[in-house]
Image 1 (cartoon, helix red, strand yellow):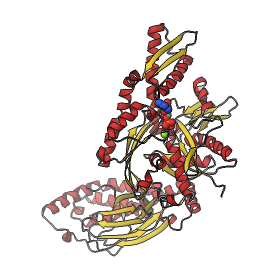
Image 2 (cartoon, helix red, strand yellow; image 1 turned 60 degrees about the vertical axis):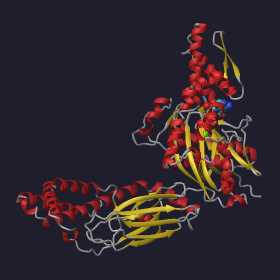
Image 3 (tube, rainbow, N blue to C red; image 1 turned 30 degrees about the vertical axis):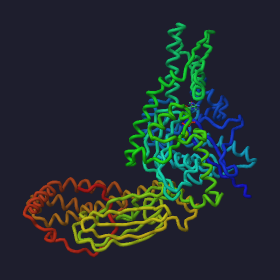
Length: 633
Ligand code: ADP
Ligand code: MG
């Protein structure tokens, strides 16, 4: 047997865990303290040694400036994106942070990016697994929320790499939870995954076909979870203490922390008991004691858990489903241990949810199942290999040799996306569709997958055709590309196999290259786009000079336009982006009145009922690449 253990990791907002396949069933790997959950908290001690998990929690209380938590909220996000989080969480950003720069968080005197902090949590999990197996573990599957975008997924992968893990795959958390319950073996059906954790609520609707999970809708609340219940109980306790004992301990950090610890214990106990006794010794010797019944507790938390109903209904609506169409309901997240929450979910979906597995472990267990599949572990699971995301972006070449991405890297498959394009020159009847794979900005730096032509477009002025390019990656990983000119109905299509022949190493190299060259690519793309814009303007001006509006300008105006025209023609083939840009802007400015006059005459032509064929547009010779066009009339 190979010593290549592949582990499954749930990198959570509140807690993280690592699991592996123990024979036929997945199991969680405990830490040195014997506990399965590793709190996603990182602290630096006085000697700047990193402490992760339960040990770091004490720092959160005693020296909060030396600890961070909930870093998952910041993964793959920019300074501008996280204003909301900063209002609610005591994240301390690095002082010298510029707008647009990668976020850095201060812990003590040091600063770390969110992936670096997550990597510290991952490294702790890796260490637990290394100790468990008695040898280093290097490969992992990591879970991410289904709604995570490309940047957030990339940041998670980066965290894995920083921690010394080869991240074989990112799996959506609800998919992992479904896998843990073996729901993939049903082959077909609709699964609702209700995930109420420490600080976030997610509802996902998955469609299962041929053993593949497709996320059809997600919704939730990024600030709703067990923390809200804790805070409510703390507030009540503080009020009680003031009323009954005449003490105001709201400003005593130590008292509040003792109360927090006690109410969390009480909350957890109430998930399995009918009542619990709160007993907190306050600094100064007084005691706060109170009996809480489950009934009273349930009344208190009702408004909190009711906030999950709206997102569930919205997700069903977005998926176009009625509650009775849901076949399976899966509970995820520690807070779904609360019986009242289970009841609510059952009422909402009219189905008894799966509860056999620990809700705070189920995602990691599913990640271990996926890890086992990737390791070629068992025959039954082999056919599910395609539970996958696209490793690289897919797109087409557009005018100027630029790549236009249509399906982004790490999209779950099956996936489909549509983009609209138009032609570059008047009378263009052929459009060359060049299908590309890769992250680079320029077509020549990406991998060419296929070429085909969309032919027989009736001659129209440049910019008039509306070409719909549709990409679809089916459950078998086969890519299907079609192009259709919507005004004439002409279409062409092709099947391509994107991953064929591309090794992981090549994928890796392409990814690395895209980081190395990102800046250079960007500059080149800018120049190409400006050049293209210049050509379009010059062509339009050439047409304008033949228009009946041209003689209506004063000779002074015409001379000025021609000077600007010459200036643009001179710089447009150079590499100086700013010079091209300035010349374009100047010419645009200078031809404003001409454009207005032309517009008037075009409107009057249209009113006279001239047909398209009479516009003097001839059939072009050129079969160019399409031009990206975001919005049509
Ligand atoms: P996350 O996915 O956000 O990392 P978890 O799924 O581990 O978090 O859920 C953590 C939350 O679950 C905490 O608020 C914790 O207090 C709560 N929790 C754990 N066990 C119970 C229980 N038995 N009853 C009620 N709440 C619980
Ligand atoms: Mg979770």
